[in-house]
Length: 260
Ligand code: NAD
Image (cartoon, rainbow, N blue to C red; front, top):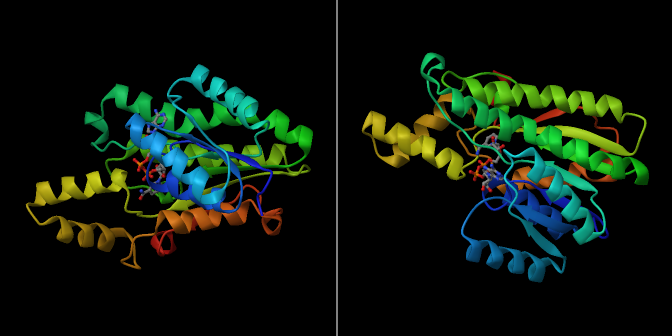
């Protein structure tokens, strides 16, 4: 379905981003991976994806907290794959603390990576999508773009912000073949969430498995994690012709978290 298209997924060396990158590559899209991690493991991943799906896979080490590296990544993607049709803004980090104890530098870092990075990437990628009159921008927001939780002031602010950005970009591209939407996952078991489970287990002095059940039970009525593959499947659908009139939407994949 996506043969001949070129995709960039930020933060795709792990978790949800990797799930989305795999799903898009499985549909034939050439791919640029981005994110941090062990250089050898990333190179292994790059080769594995290319071999498994018969697509071109490149890697960018760009730091999403640095606007100039983001612009450079978009330019290199376009030069390396000849084009950029699908942009998935996924890189994100978390930090939890009560607002009055929340370190200001953590606020700046989360706003930069979880919110501003998407602005810089969209700004740089959109002109060529307009020229070809086809493009897909998928922002990975969160249930925390729709509702709040205590101790996540920067994350919740950034995720609410990215839903606003999604709507503006959707309006500005409404009469074109470019769409912009957001996916709002609930709990997905990735390293980002594993850290929160480990913190909960330590603070309550309970086993990790019990902390997992407690975390799900508090927010996610299905009592099951969503998976990176399920998020990837929705990203693929948003890239399909069937989704051409889904514009400016915030689509939850959250086990009924935000139905409450
Ligand atoms: P993860 O920690 O598994 O992956 C994060 C990815 O972002 C990694 O590839 C990491 O290297 C990359 N990254 C971090 N900082 C970066 C930077 N400065 N520059 C470039 N890359 C950077 O986390 P995840 O759970 O897969 O999260 C991915 C996205 O999904 C985030 O935006 C997160 O907010 C969102 N999300 C996650 C969940 C969940 O339950 N896991 C729920 C809702 C939304």
